[in-house]
Image (cartoon, rainbow, N blue to C red; front, side, top):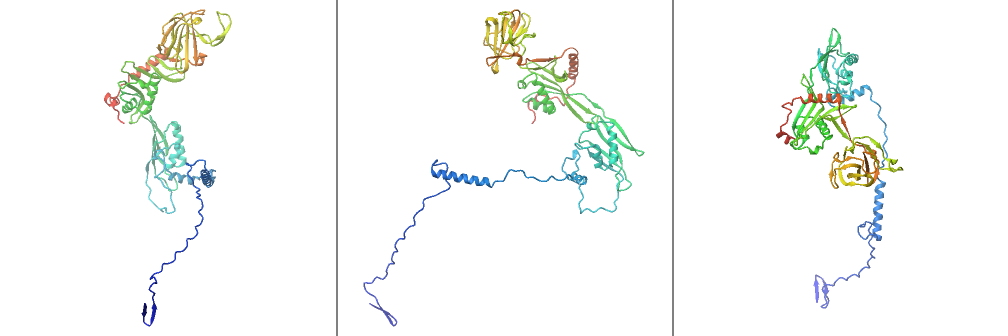
Length: 498
């Protein structure tokens, strides 16, 4: 077949294909694959394998690198600033933040800057009335100087006041009312015309200038020292009921400590009634101050009332009951009131005639004297015990055991629960004994110990003139009436306000 176009011609063979496929290139040779290598390994799997150790090494290297870049702990040294000069200290004091009640200057006077221009001529007030406050740790003269009084006059006033009262008795925060008069020129301080302040709760001092001289006048303040008595029902909380009745927090805390010397505070019931008498001073000017707790009373629903008053005996004060009995101290109660005739240790036996260990101590006591349990316990044995005669053994808490020997009669039985001070028998002379006495032994974890190593209980007891003075003071306190505004009724005490 001839195919032509224009002047040219092409010959197409009948058996020739119209399209020829492109040749397929031969596959290229693949690069060899490297084995997997991961520095970060899961340390929770395949423990002990080479990969696990490689991950552990990577973790250790990272931790060491972080620790190497950590900052050091050495202290940074710096130069101490030089102390401020007087002018700089006064400027810093004026800019300081502190309570105004303690004599701070914050907000009252600011230090001048370069933008402040003094006026050439300004009119002055003829007198200035102001109030200065005595700061904590501040001096009287320093307060007056801050108010504008000259240093010489402030020192003279401080000396006048010191001759009248103790300067330490003037409390921090006391306001000083001053009046400053006219000055001759601006280069001098204003003269003090008058000064008035409360030096003590019962005394006010007034200083006035009369004919150019300063005079000091004492102004006594009448004070009523009648104590404050507060009563009310305990309700759900003794502390909250007493506070809701108007008792100060410190007085309530002292009341609870006083009760704890005689009873278990947790045993106080909701129907019990508390009674507090507190020191109080009421000035004629209206101020009121409360002091320490004088009396702690508790009227109990079961009739076992408690009346406690603080009394000094032997140089120390403690709480005594109305009967004159004070606080109990010590761990074990003395089994009999007699003196000790033989102590713990080696001794020659009066009957056997040779030396042997005396495992306890002997108390002198008359025949038939009641023998009391040293502390709470259980009777482990009660009966005849050979040379000990009639004997009672008590087992106590903490691995302690006590024995009471040579009794004439036993009033306890095995297994019985006994309380401290309960009678368990009577003094006699049974067994190997030369006369009526009590042989008392103390064991700790089965081993005998010296009973003198454990203190016996002692009770402070007033007698004679001390007891008479104590009861007279107690009667005077109990005569204090209860104020209507201070007495709490049962409904308000049972549900005290938060």
